[in-house]
Image (cartoon, rainbow, N blue to C red; front, side):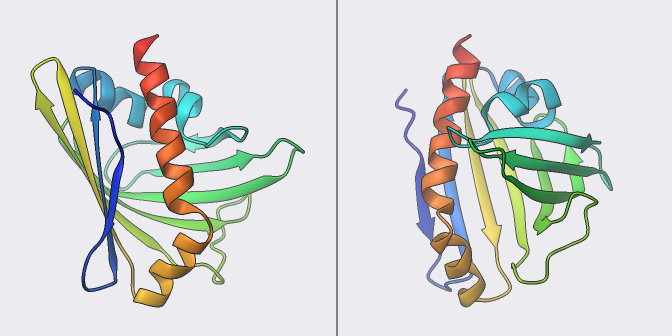
Length: 162
């Protein structure tokens, strides 16, 4: 199975679609997205690394983390987890914030819906990210979202092979 990240923009201009295959069963891929110890190994594009302050991966839970750059700079993000169906899907809203989780209003929220599908010993993750406006989507894309998320998903391949 070819593991290529495909990111496309919805014609409405307010949604990104991400599709990625993995050479691992869906349960293992799910754990990599929802367990701190595994998530931190792949989430950030190199040379950045992810550090979690809080992770409560349940409906109504929170993931508060930062991406730490090579010079020690920290970029904080909070993910409010809205719904979870174990091994199948989750919905969340991600926003940039400070270390305490206070939202930075200069950056738009990203509304995620991730679906996990089993293909026998392999799996597919499909993510739809909705934005409040096309300008919001373009702002996130201009920050390098496509390149960074593609790199992170490549990191996940390495983690799943270990």
